[in-house]
Image 1: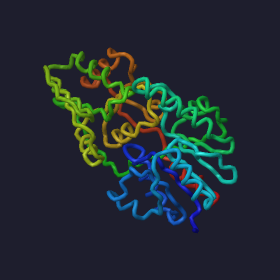
Image 2 (image 1 turned 90 degrees about the vertical axis):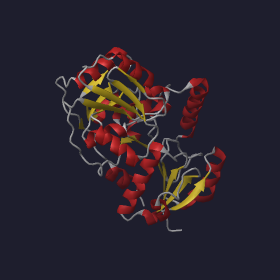
Image 3 (image 1 turned 45 degrees about the vertical axis):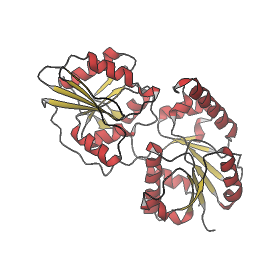
Length: 339
């Protein structure tokens, strides 16, 4: 086998992780390096839905520790470099190869899990990651804030952690917005996980006294029963594919994001690229990736409500802009350096 690099994406099969994987494959292919690469794909990843996967040489692996160990024992000796794309180091220490871990799950460094079971599971994962790490491994993260958190949580020296965020927003088109329109649309791209802080957002929205001359819609990407009262409408649009999400970016004026913790915040970057202004919780990640139109305290319903009212009134709202740089070139150059 003339392949030189193994990219382990076991545990990645949906949502943001899948987008990350697809963008990485496209970028590797564009540089003519796909013929040097083998992938471990999670067995749950649907490789039939995207022709991109058909260009890859891959093994399908079950998302179990035992299956991962077997895969590494059978195949990893053939490679010079191993890249673990799903936060977790190799299942046993690899000393004679270059190993990179791309860490993009900030929640593993913090306690925002839903329920006691998930909290315990999260802490066990932290112990496992720390145990499987080696001083020889290099870590790659998305923000400087995450670098600090990873260094502290897993006792990793900061000189072993590089900050190379990568994301695909180039194809998103800018659309003109009328922020003085009589109908204004807010969008929250979310899930029902605890750290997304959805309950406080809905309460803040209900409490908000918007101008009676305007209709205010809040679109939320989970399932639920729509609510309408006064001039306010909450519309649950469910989980949607990227193509449909781009339509909602186009029709929305503001993306609102009250999350307590985010690794990067891809919807924030996508929304700004589409022409939306963003109203964000004042967490370190968001302050690092963009200049928001407004920041608020995510623990305060009053603060969230006040920001939404200011946005509706167009009260000296500055335009949002992206600060973070796409480091996909740096990332690929780094992992293929010894190949």
